Image (cartoon, rainbow, N blue to C red; front, top):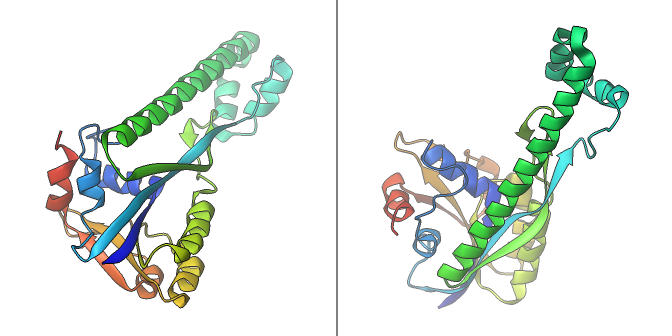
Length: 239
C-alpha cells in the first residue's frame, strides 16, 4: 500500500466547482459528501494519510481604512474609474453623497466580514462531519470595497508547496487538486525524492477540462486523473 496524501488548493477547487455547477451554490455545495468526492482519485492500492484542504486565513480590505473626512474620501474615490464617475454625477450634493458613500462602504465591510465568518463555520462543519479532512488556513484574500470584488488570494500556493516538500518524509504519493503551474518547482523536488505525484482535473458536461488545461503541470506530474461530471455530481448532493 502506498501512503498517500491529498492536497487541495481551496480557491482553485472552489472556482472549478462553481464553473461545473453554475448558480447551484454561492460558496460550496452544502449537501456534498466531501470524503467520497475528494477520494474519487484514490485507488485500493493507496493508503490515505490525510486530506489537507488549503483555504484563506485572513480577509483584507482595500482600502485598509475608510476615511472619516470627506476630503480624504473624495481623493480615494477619484482613484477608481467607477467611483470617480459616480462622484462627478453627484457634485451638486457632494457632501451628502460622500456621507452616504461612507456609510455604504462601512456596511459592505461588515457584510463581507460576516460572510467570511460563515465560510469558517462551513469549514468547521465539514471537519466535524468527515474524517481525514483538515483545513489549513494560510494566506490572505483582498476584497476591494470600491470595486466590490475579490482580488487574487495570496499565500496559499506557498504554504501548499512548502508542505509538499515536508511530506516527502511521510508519504509515497500525493494527489494534487490544482492546475496551478506555480507548484512545478516543488513537484520536481518531491519527485526527485523518489515520490510520485498525480494531479486532478474535472471534465464538464461539454467535455471541457477544468481548472484550465495547464500543459506544463500535466507534463510534470506522473499522472493526470480526470473526474467526469457525472462522478462529481453523484456526491455533490449526497446528503
